Length: 359
Image (cartoon, rainbow, N blue to C red):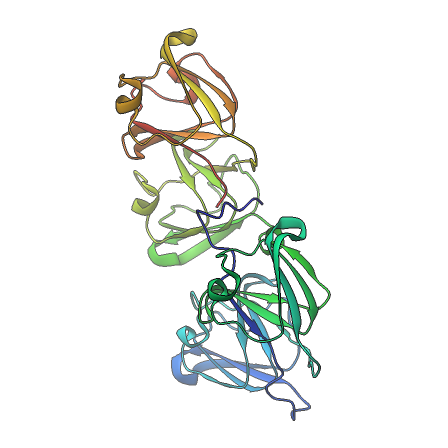
């Protein structure tokens, strides 16, 4: 996974996980289905890779002892949350994104020192800084918003996506040598039948030519990692939509025309340059222009409203029917497109296009 620093922040808060409840011999955590410690409950004193059979939802938690790392999905996947001894009457108290807790593990006791090295670039390149204390605001110390690789030398640490220990959390153990890609090794997208991430859901980590049997409709989507091209119909047909990491609470958020998503594929990672040639006429005839950057308004640059053929030389691109990246979308991989029907359009009208960079 290649992170482009002008688009997303990898990590902007660091906090050491000290063993807050050192006197306790038996770790214990209690989950409650409803807020304020009401409803069905479940007690646990050890790690569990799948909590699905014990409760349907989790809206409050009481930690009697131990430091716990909780996960949104089974098998220690999805959003991560660090909880120490205390009471959490609703999921906002542990900075939860929803009421889903499906796996968990204990953070071992650590009574020694803490030490971590962070790097400006991948593979431990660029500026390096070593920390032994908590850091509420990385930019003020490191003068970079992003961390691309990490060496955890002593102790257990939590990384936070935003300053002051807020946003997405990542649990790091001693001895681990981390690059940004470790945080998102599995491409994952979650489809929900109802708006606001409610109703029946389906997870997917690879392309699928027919999603019809997995859900009847799609009204919200959460992209955990990866860049995805989704299609209105099976076999990669119909309206196309480009989604990167983020939460989409209703289909208008991905510029959907309806609640139908029936196939999807991943857009490959691309770490090099981008280059595309667009032509006034079919078969690469007429006026030609070459682009290496996004183009929010084709007519202002090309002096034509229509593009009849295109040659994608480097990287993947999205065409949009209207300016400013609106309207129908068309996904173009490297290759030759002799006529507009080759990219799935019924008209040559293209108002804007952009590079598919990995967020």
